[in-house]
Amino acid sequence: MTNLNYDVVIVGAGNAALCSAIAARESGASVLVLEKGPKKKRGGNSYFTDGAIRVAFDTLDDLRQVIPAMTDDMADQIVMPPYSAEKYREDFQRITQGQTDTTLSNTLIDNSLETMKWLHSHGLEFDLIYDNQSFVKDGKYHFWGGLVLKSVGRGIGLVNKLNDIATEMGVDVWYESAGTDLVQDADGKISGINVLRNGETETIGAQAVILACGSYEGSMKKRIAQMGEEWEKAILRGSEYNTGDGIDMAVAAGAVKYGDWKMGHAISTDANAPVVGDFEVPGDVFKKSSYPIGLIVNKEGKRFVDEGADYRNYTYAKYGREVLKQTDATAYHVFDGHVADLLRSEYREELCTKFESDTLEGLIDQMDIDKAAFAGTIHEYNLAVQDGDFNPQVLDGKRTVGLEVDKTNWANPISKPPFLAFPVTCGLTFAFGGVKATTGAEVVDAQDAPIPGLYAAGEMIGGLFFHNYPGGSGLASGAVFGKIAGANAGKYVG
Image (cartoon, rainbow, N blue to C red; front, side, top):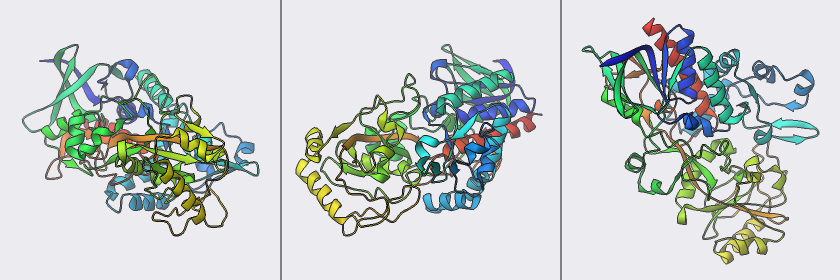
């Protein structure tokens, strides 16, 4: 029996869902957001991010449109290479090995900055990523890698501010309320959703439903079935509530699975991080992403990837899978005094697991590693390092030659104290598989026909990411397709 009616019901309460809610409410629709978890665990995977958002821009002035607090004097202290829409497209093609659905990724790219302007108009605050995406040289901040914009307050600030905006606009939010089934009329149109709340199931009438409740990585059963048994060893970086419910509901309503169902966003994270995302810990303080300027070695004391193959933003989401393949799903990030001052902020967190010594021998004694093999690896590596200028802002070509796995950029010898090692494991963020949707965020059936009244946003949409992931494009996708889904659902019910 239907107890309540809303124009639009949104399943999920992270970045994509809340952008959907704001856009739908902006159109005049009545909106209900369903959050499976309790209020203290709201926000899905968005809560655990650094708030980094990849947008296309040509000049610093483009970014200043969403950072009005930046003065001309501040701007004069910034060296900001452009990150054009064409470069964004090239990165998407390269990183996904040409498999991205370009209709979707182009929509994301072309709307990225405009969507941030829209969010800023509603009160969301942005800043540049000074700490992890720039370094100081000659008194100026030099940015690199294209990923330069973030929401203020990391993912926590993003989630809290989006909730404030939605609440002020009159969006209703129910916590500990899980969508279980979509309701369709005889013609297949969405007419409501069944919700498990307070131990009972009730039907909420709705003309449109937006599914924005993430992928299936929180379900160990689904993760192993889709990605392989080795993924049982990975820890979950984000929300324990992302268990594929939205995908299941959509498929039952006629949607088709789409995208890369074998892979996901998986990074190096502290070996002693919680096994699921801890909402009591502010942001994701456990990730470890400075390996391009250091080395990664396994317990056998051997390197197994080219740490300097590309900027961190283009390798971090796949190198976690390489760590998963190692003994005990464990490896070490190793650095020395050449780069100690350049390490990202997460290497200085109070909860960080770290080994440090003034000598390489002292460092080795602290590590659970084949000590002789590791010492040999460092010796061979140091001999193979070529001359050149080390420059973390560019692919500097400072490399090794003659190793089984050469390092092609940012190769400094490991020879200067302090010597540092950080044990890491594989942290799974989200799975790449989802449902098929149009550029208008409409969920489609096996005949590519939109299911009337059904939309998707965020990690629910498959086809964007294959094999790998350009850093910061997840929050960008959630915001872009969230806005599109909400606006189109509002038009549909209007």
